[in-house]
Image (cartoon, rainbow, N blue to C red; front, top):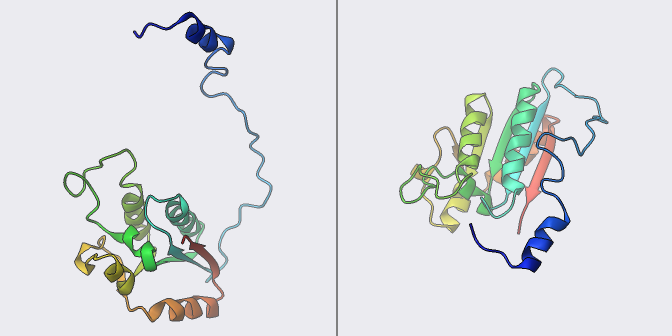
Length: 170
């Protein structure tokens, strides 16, 4: 064990740790809004323009789309621009599939789950090309799309009356 100075030990001892034992509630659990489920034919559409692992934007959008799917909504996610990088199956170090850090494959695994449970994932080919990513590097089941499809997909889902969640990161 590292030897501590008197002042270092005094600083550590000022506040007991852990201040609360594991499992302690520090937040209430009251849900304010009803737990809505999809009504017949309802759709949930997510647009993602966020870079994988640069913030939680992309990952949270996938989790929300999955939750909508599990609530009975027809659910689809459209990755475009730098968001296209979220769809790469080639993530990993030192080889694909190996996580160089905990959570490196959270996005990959969540997209695979989303697709396996019936969600649709679209990925803009132009977004891939901007970053030198290849179409054959996409996660299995991801549908490659033309750059002009971004706007038409939005129109398509809006005309279906979809709830649209648009996430954007510069």
